[in-house]
Amino acid sequence: MRSPLLWLCLASAALRIAVLFAAPMADPQEYEQVVIARNLLAGDGFAMAWPYQPVDSTRAVLWASDPTPHPSAFMPPFVPAVAALVFSVTGSGTTGILALLILQSLVGAAVPWLVYRIARRMASHRASLMAAAWSLLYLPGLLSSATPSGAVWYAVGGLVVVYVAQDVLQTQRRYWLLGVAIGLLALMRSEFVALGLVLCAVPLLQRRWKGALVAAAMLFVVVSPWVIRNTVEFGKPVGMISHPWREIWRGANPYASGSGYAADGVSIWEGDRYPEIVARLDALPVTQTYEVEADTIFREAASGYIAADPMRWVVLGCKKALMLWTIDPYYPKAKSVLYVVPTLLTGLTLLLGLGLAIRTLLRSRSWTSGLTPLVLVCLGLTGVFAVTYVLPRYQTYLFTIALPLIALVADLLPRRWLSASFGAESAGH
Image (cartoon, rainbow, N blue to C red; front, side):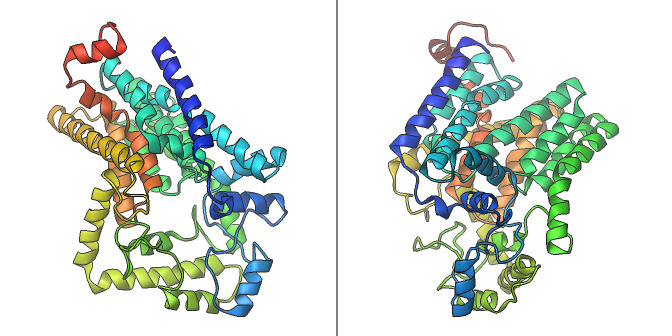
């Protein structure tokens, strides 16, 4: 690792730990990852009760007394499993939470290195260093290590997948590693099963059918234990998570703004504003398939909303895509300079970089270049959040994965600017 890059990685770790102590986390019980990890260590299984507040008194007592009244696949297992592993050594109290967040800060230290390595396959040395350095200026990215939400894991995992996909295109080998990397990322974020299959098809750009099949096979090998576990738990086939329609519903309901928050800043969640949803969840028998049947309620609600006015939903999807790459104005902290300035500046710069990347691909038709995997991930995640909804932490991991695009923008700057910042080493593509 070259010296400037080493210092950037060390600075990333130090800044993340500093942010961790400067901005203490809210109640850990708000995070599903912590709840599941604690339940697992308490012997209640890798599960949690469906996160809503029952109105029915009997159901409320059950939800309060038993943290796992039904089988659960509310989220993929990777991050809760890491939390459980840490808690098994440190306990799940304040010390354990702090240990988990310090571990995440050390994981985040890899971001500048990965950003540089990916960018270097698309741009000059100095421009790539600038992209790596930008990760230290993007404050929401540093904050992603300071909560157990998992965003820093998704970001680092996404960068690893892009790097390995670039390597596969460049070397035409280690297809199995691409499948493993995507599989691990899918165990963090469920949308990477679908997006991962697209990335597994990258070898087809070089007509490497065997390579694509090997990558896809390894993806399924990695995720299959979790899928099998879910099928056994629910008594029917269930994928990575049990509630995909709930995610769509949060962005397709009468109060939908495109954000995880309504226009008045109130979180869009099962509650007082959706009494019909709560009533149906209360009335649903608590059986082995509770979560699957609960998701059906959200499927019906979201489908009805979309069917009532499809164009409204399409326009809302376009609004979500715009918010994803700029700012979420409904976020309670949307007026904070610490959120608006770095997010807006980073998002607009990344959009410019993405535009440059797409233009280069269309003009050169060099689909096997290092640009392709990064463009696929950026466009794929934009589509996912256009269908679901936007939250700042989703922006954070998308922006972090997309940071190498800043190198394309940096290469447009006068050469003397980059030389002044990052030394006199020759810059070549």
